[in-house]
Length: 147
Image (cartoon, rainbow, N blue to C red; front, side, top):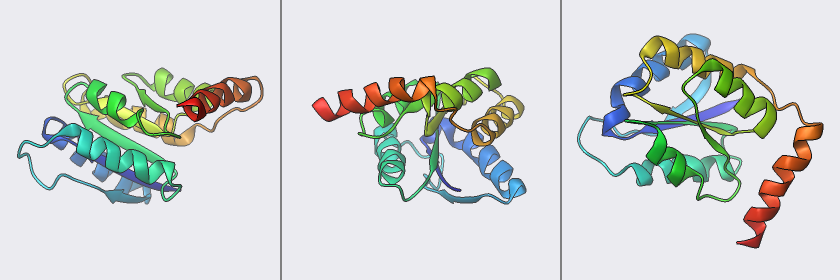
């Protein structure tokens, strides 16, 4: 499974922690930046990750900003992306299992490094359950097609 992750300047340190976690897991991933803590516009990075996931080039994406809110809003503008802002392992599991979320959003100012690693692990380990949830996710896809 290929993963792409990015942040803005406010999520830079937490992204570095998640890069280390992915390396430890032996995961196949791309760190899409930014390369420093210099101020950047979060939509640029959110859309880069969202487009890469929507195209199928990457199975999952991870985005980090100060709160995770801006990244989530921007990523969800891309058709085919179901970005979920998670601050607990439970939310990450449910986002994947029930909503087939394909982009995890985290807030550096909201969760610490240890919790973020646990959330990432839960997100990556949880498959979509399908079944009764499939028709609900299909309704989301149908709504996107109407735009």
